[in-house]
Image (cartoon, rainbow, N blue to C red):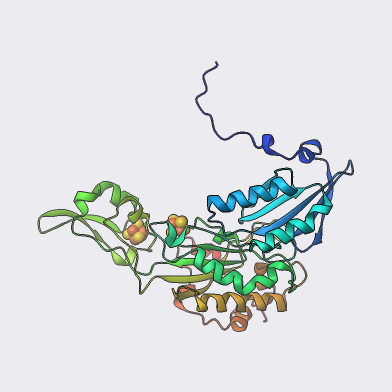
Length: 356
Ligand code: SF4
Ligand code: SF4
């Protein structure tokens, strides 16, 4: 009975600040105090202030120590990270808010992203780490957020919440399917088959790894290998994950696509998947000007046309996709046609026409 077979992570309740433990499940309301700061008020009258700052997600040990020092100084040691890589400092002392913000800004971490604003961009590994990346993650995110920073800090007003995500390939470790604007790295060519494949990989595993059955065993010059049926390949890089002899990266042809209209929230309308807006933009490091410009244009359309608290997908449904494409200057192309086997479910199947 004493034997522990699954240790697992420690229970989260051990790490809650005392004010949350005391008032757990007994919060009356919460509201914004100033950009990047909100207060939760409990039925007991206790207050908890949250100060949200942007973090770059890929954090050095030194940076985490800086955060911890600030949390020790102003928040009795309590902080947390949000699912979109913001860092939030939690304190019951209102007088600590301004000095904490001053120190965060001196360290280069703007405070914002709460309520009606653009939150920090959730993103994946990119060229820093992942083997199947079709684009970088941190580099694009830094460039896009530098351009949109006034919408994060509250210097420029927005009609509601806007969530941006980046995934560096369509395996999608980032939340790109459920974000208002999604930046998605794409490969555009099938993997190349290296000559020594059978010495590096187990062919049955490689064949089984392909979700579209585009890989089949073959013999070349009497050696076991595989061949790729190009028309069936959707450039997902699954095969490269199990076999390094099938490289996908292509410096010329890999690039970025932009998707819009996803959300997780149940408020006002059901959760939505994002849909393709821009099929291809080039990889153009170090500042990706084409991606930055395109995302800004889409944000500005939303800022100008959305009703209060309307999310991107809700706005597009209201004004219609044709009008959104016209406003954004996006040409309809063959890539916008859904040819997945369940595509019929996503096609318009009524005789009603949108008037916009
Ligand atoms: S999205 Fe793709 S390339 Fe990026 S970290 Fe995930 S698996 Fe790797
Ligand atoms: S990239 Fe994906 S679809 Fe193409 S061959 Fe590899 S596993 Fe199959």
